Length: 427
Image (cartoon, rainbow, N blue to C red; front, side):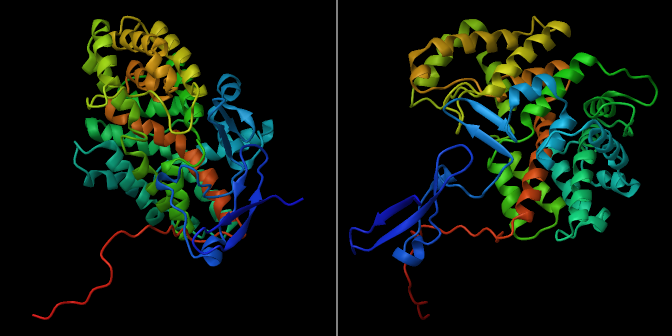
């Protein structure tokens, strides 16, 4: 029997039966596409908290259980056993690669990871003290001018080439953003290194000396990238899909996602966590700041706690916490005062009835900034790191959206609260 949801307008007595769609897992979704035609009204959902904006088979989140699946695979299993490029292939194609497919995908990443020299010169137009995210938005947005041979979104081969270029070039673009800001020469990619190892090489090596990638830093960054690769219909992914629905070229769509990620409420949250830990200053001050966080009249907020979707412990946070211990221990940073503050803050908050009742658990941003800090990545590059990893998810979601047979341009409606019609006064 077909499941339907009936809505009745109490003012007019009119009713409409709305079909209920079932996904493979997760709550059912009420199809409200006929609501305006039947009852003459829209729905109102600020922040789209209970609105499914699309069909997707890429990522699934169960906020109550604290579960995150990439194409059905638990993210903690992928972080423990897989590599970032295998996860990238999985998100793009729906299945883990065979060895031959993995080798071919790795080859493509090496084939596409360099930038045109004319694109390298594009960086000189930015001030040396420009924020790396500002540079990244500009450079990625400009890619269609340098690689206009793969911008036909109706051509499957073009879409694949653009996707490979974006994933392959993002570490090169990011490292160049960093080098430009510190005044050092750009370092070309080296295909004998892994995807993540290459990023570290391009960021931290100099032409005058040999550079050896630290395996601890490489493993930690690989794990963070896997955890950040996709996260369902978050703000930046929704931005990419909305831009893509207008049939904009893929480079412009990904640039729009980078711009959305730049916001401190989204990709900049791990930077805000470090700033908060520095503000707390010492373990002795934690009780005072927890009290401030519980005071609704105090502007102070504990950053890195709670999540819009997760009402349980963020599964990514568990993995990152362990990774943070490993990194700080093996890189000789166990005495980092910020890490000590973070551990004690987590311990005290998780025992506090206020946080327990509100299910405010540490999220992925709580520890990732500490790992970046230990590796030597400066604070203004944190969101750039996030963008490298999330490009894979953006690309997978964009490709899925473009292939939808009934795909239409996004056009939300509004609840208008402005002036009603009025005539222009005579003067």
